[in-house]
Length: 372
Ligand SMILES: [Zn+2]
Image (cartoon, rainbow, N blue to C red; front, side, top):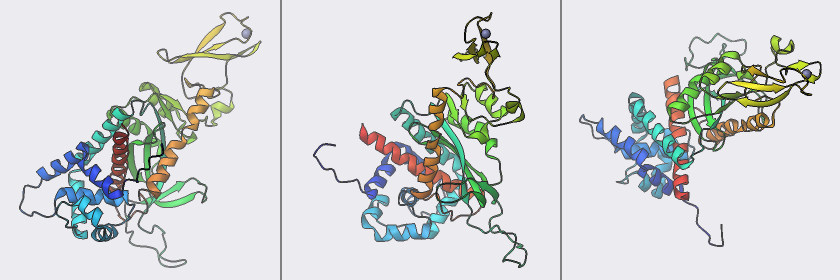
């Protein structure tokens, strides 16, 4: 930026802009159309505004969101047209209503991702897929206290024990709760599809469904970048069936140890990679001296012989962009209050994740539009 100083946009201004965007305005209009019975209640624009404010200000509970909006004049006027802040009870009732009309929320998310796609034409070409822990708002220990009685009631029956890997600030281990599984655009870092599942469910079960959701939103991924845990035959073949090249490290299975993943060899040495035919779904390998007849051979793609061979610069470069999904989990958890969970039951946790990510994506869209 040049010498001209621009004041940072206030969060209240940001919220007014989100509520006015056509994608969110349509959600408000659709929800309004469902209100055909008596009780007038607070305007739905105020209720959607409260939900967005909760994520934009990273507030974990409705009680504190209401307290914040009540004492913050600019925020209250950005969210409500009449200046009347909705009650905590109204916020809870609104989330119940949203769960009933979840297809309207899903359609709103679709509109926002479609508009982002227009703003970023290359979005979704390379997607990074991973899962991350969401510890439950509940205690899952089997015993109420050390050496004490066995717990007879679990306050969140949908939560379960799962495993998380280590990050910089803590070691890995067991945790009780849920996992969010997401496909993130490796270029923009924005989530394209996600699902919340109980923690014990294996991450590999959701990769292909996430890819299908990304495609349903109109994106055309060409590569799917995943960690070693996703390196299995069904995921590889599922990606190939969808014309997507999986990029994963090689999992050391029996066949790999037996040398099945090695390049072809001859008396002249190891054959060299000579290109990929995406239509044929095979890679070409050549005798190092060219003395063999035929001089080259095609290797059909499978988990052991991916279309983007693991030793190539391209594969390594793509794999290094996998960090996009981990960084996005970090931002959602810490800057957008995806954590700590303050709701129980998988349906409520899913709604919380949807609202959090919608707020994040809608802000990214507003920013993209402001830049043009
Ligand atoms: Zn040879």
